[in-house]
Length: 548
Image (tube, rainbow, N blue to C red; front, side):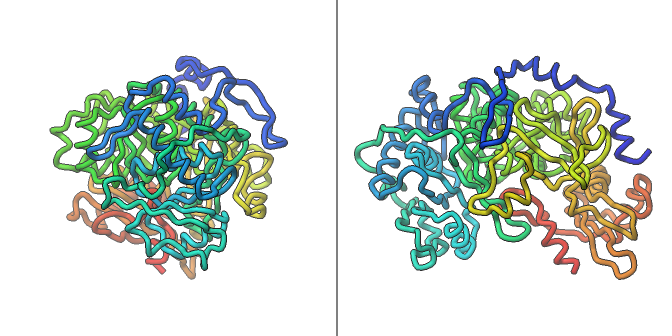
């Protein structure tokens, strides 16, 4: 047997079946419905009609409950609702209405939350953008979705396109953090209380893919898809109004918007906002405010474990955490279990195109099934397909297709990309995966990251897992380097805990656990961290360019 089969054999019989686990957490009632013209989908029978209803329900039920905390400022749901109404009035006064696109180039802040829900109140479409984008990147996206207004950080004014560059752009509204009320230029004295009701299948938010390959595409997250994702998160994480939810990832990312902002409103919890992630600050905030839930990437866990203030911090209220986007090293899982024995870890697998999660790992299986990403969520469906779009048997590798109520209808104004990447309501993930007999999904690698060495296939993630098992290795990325003889060879980029470890020792570690052709040809040491985009994904394209 090979390494993939070994993992399947070792984990066969572990844990519960999909049905028994979801029965235990009392999943809300579901039913089949027809949506987007031709998609027959399993849906939650009772769900919010639109994004605005997430806030409206919290305001109705917990008006004096804490909605958000950022720095020295704490606001209740009633106060948040008033600001949302005043911001909605300000946008409406500028002619923004149903279906109009409003770009948001805002840092993590209460103002981000206010504008997000103000846009939803008008039935308009929010377009959150990364604050690290250049003017050219912003201009492309604003033109692509024909943006009518942009709300932006005043400190980023040089990155905001003018109307000459974006003909549809009528209003640019600055958020000035040097003022007592940063959003003053948008807030009207009289709050808008009327809500524009829009069909649940209409677009609520456009999130542009990270653009690691080619031009970014705008995934159309609908009110319908968002409702299902927040119910999935709330159900699996068992979130309630007593939870304090930290957002430390960019709010402009699907995790920030859906898993944290919208989910916090749905469960009526308190959102703790970090303007930017720093491990020591994260630990201090989590301790001070009694954080109970967050979603972060494995690298953030590693940085927290290495932070000097970690051991002395009171993190006893941190009961559950989602993670995803990269491999969680076994040594990290072990240290978390040792330092935070009450913390439940939930691997989350999804994407912008799936409105965040499609698969979540039962917390009690995080260590036993560390090679897997979890079980398919109740209103999702996973199919593992061969190159002819035929489903493969359980235990066989193929491309992961994702269907379900959370999958977006397509890309904004991009029918060619929609036709290419969506088939019969399923999104083609580009991931190579295996489904085991009990329904647990394992992601082997990105199909494009499979290295072809003289006809032998090398899964970069397999080599990365082996290197992460070495105690000196903190982070690793394995990429292909062109070879005139064999086509491609594997090379490893490393961030080390112990710089004294030799390449010979790392190579020997691999030799004992991998076939000889899988062992990296070279090891490149990086001083601080692997290159990542703002959403935490490793930029393997940049690493390949360094080798070239």
